[in-house]
Image 1 (cartoon, rainbow, N blue to C red):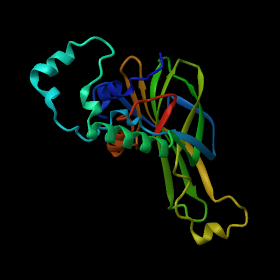
Image 2: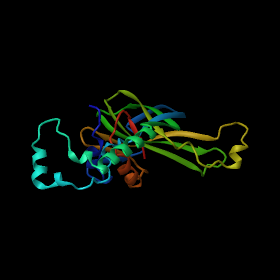
Image 3: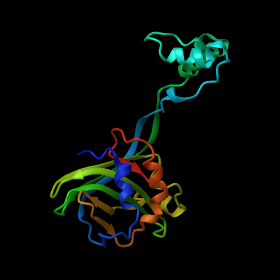
Image 4: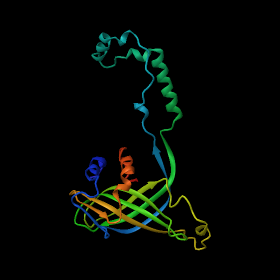
Length: 233
């Protein structure tokens, strides 16, 4: 089953030290391959239907008796508030704003992919992973792009994890890297940080701290999941 209701599921596992969690260095998800590339996605803007308009002017129809009568009115009855000056003004302003604001916009970013295989005997539901870049000329500079994915991956099955981010391999490149004649600016690898299974058990990488992503995880899961498999942390 597609893990669309991810937030309630994740709330069951907010503590990395909970009973049943297993830590280790050998990931139960085997990384078969990975790559990244520049990409562009069309981001839908939030629906403005719920935006509150200016309050309409009070009139006699707002009295309790007539308001109650409107609630019992048959279908097709027109609210008198819509015909006030304030009501008409608010409706016109909303139409103008919607005509000027596109429903979606293209966003330039980066696409991160990792092909994994479930080497365990359990169904993996949620995966935390990262695409890691180490600057060739300056190995102390390590950039991590972390993601969370809803996968529903059965034992021995493979799946490609796909994530989009506006953040690239690095925001700063050293002079040494720019002068590197080989053209290879980074050493790249993918790490599986945490796997949450359908039976409620958890595997977590030994030197990964769940607490580091709790804030970004709350932000990522605060909006509905649509067609995306993964979200950035």
